[in-house]
Length: 168
Ligand code: FES
Image 1 (cartoon, rainbow, N blue to C red):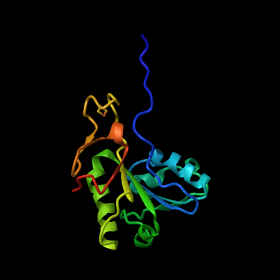
Image 2: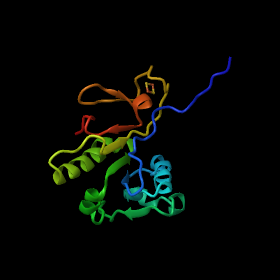
Image 3: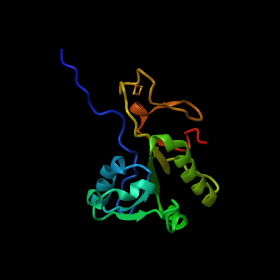
Image 4: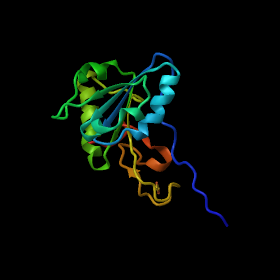
């Protein structure tokens, strides 16, 4: 008998299209889980901005598709023009260090909430980039607490709509 491991989860639910404005944020984590999406997006002439916050600023630019605009954080963790860039985006994906998920996802969500009276569905996603011990939905190790039904990141993620996730 041979055991095989295949890909788990679903593709990041990007609304594909030329001219779409895609904002990717790496919050104190390598942007690696977002780079395939960035590449796919620039291939169809979408506009892509990647924000590198904290230690993510040290990520080598050679790993980022050249057509992607990269913004880096200031030493205090803020980033220039955050308000305008958040308004510019049609869709956002945020990846964060696992220990900082509640803080990182809440921070972005509440920034958006300050700009819009409500945060639309399918607009901002947290990317739950974590180990998947089983990858099949059996062990529940990747469960993310949500407002209605809790989600398994290995099956329904890794990107989950932050309007659904229970945030701090
Ligand atoms: S990794 Fe086991 S349920 Fe998701």
